[in-house]
Length: 198
Length: 396
Image (cartoon, rainbow over all chains, first blue to last red; front, side, top):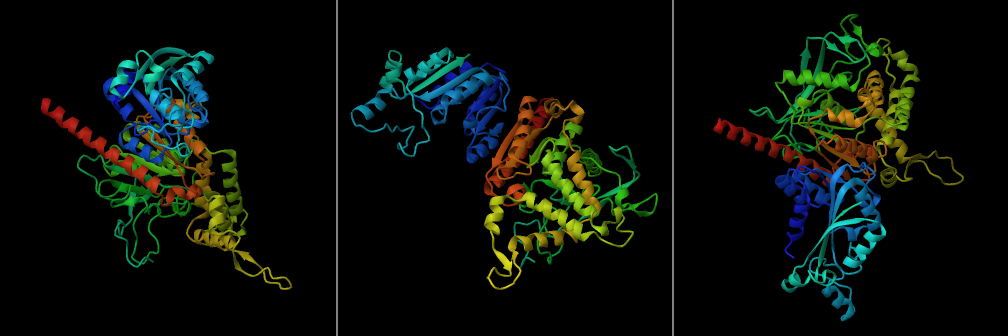
């Protein structure tokens, strides 16, 4: 997947002039682009002080927040869309974070690395080693990503929580996978992108 | 005394006294017929007059925020870590103004000044003040300095309260409010600490019901005790543990001997109290702690902080320190939450530090970077606006 494919999809799902909350916003570039392209009004939440400084220099509203504590400072449905890209797997309680996102936002956009991806499966099945990808280049003992799931796992959680999947898209970096992900997304996509509501 | 004044310091600075002849109506209903503010300024006001920054001091601060008054000074102004050439509040690029607040005791009109009506020292009869009175007097100061709009109003603790009040009282005269280690109102515990400090002062026989100047005394013991109480609340348990622990500065616990023990923390506190009581007016201390206690940002807005902040037009940077228990991060997060609900631009940094409330004055890399980055953003915004104006000029 080219690094911006998921962002392109997210931008299409965000309404112009809407109010956006971006969880684990990093340097805030997504919000910056959304503001330029969609004139959104947004806030990013981030825990890493270095990234907070980068977001400030990117002219973003960034709020130091530990997402594992929840979003109690935000009122119900106070944002049009709450976004979390590639961070759900690093949460202590991803299911509770999802609940909080759906409470605060009318819509939610979530992206995560799909551990049902064939390369991850081969790593475990053939080599007997935990998958290490270029994008998530950590060993099992030092990874911040403590809750990996597959596309099927995620959808099972949504079903259990009565979360409405309004749209789903899959992305793959490798050329061949780009064609195959449409047929078997859980096997051929490395990143899953969901639009949810409750 | 520093061997020589450090390179990154603004260097020698000279305070100025600004006199105001027109009366100032105060929140308590009384009026100061005239008054003066002692200020320091660093840097130069640019042609567009959009680089002026107001620094609001905290409880025991004054106008001397940066630099040295004399090469013999053993320490610089109270916020020299953050104000100076190349520092986060960069005096090469900003025009920095720091007044001593009304009611203070370092040259601005206050309890130790002469009441023009009685021609005697005001003392305890000086009118009680509120943060809005300071803000009003600072607005008059801005008029005198030809500053229509502050690029930023910045303050820590009680200074942060003034920055917030500025945003509500003069929304069109402030571009950014930087509120550090502050709160929208004090908690009961916080008021309690202030009341202990006030009681310490008032119960000193030399306080003389506030008329100590006339009686030619100074309630130094009371003031020192007040400062000791305050000072402890500005530090963290962890920091006191690592700085002093249970080290003793005198005496011994040797059995069979009587050699009274003094812990290092005791000598330290006594030194802090003594130094402070020699340089601060007890009535000013009472007045300033009352301003802190009375401050309630949303009182006039149906006690609704969102409604209060809705009046503001500026952008906000809120900073807290994780070991600060006197003005905890939770208090700052309440400000942030209200600002978000009021749909204001706000950024918030919670700085890792074990130095308690005092951290806002002390060196900290993350804090420096955060503040410097935000100050840069202000300049970038100014440049962008100038470009837009030039382009508009070209097309019209």
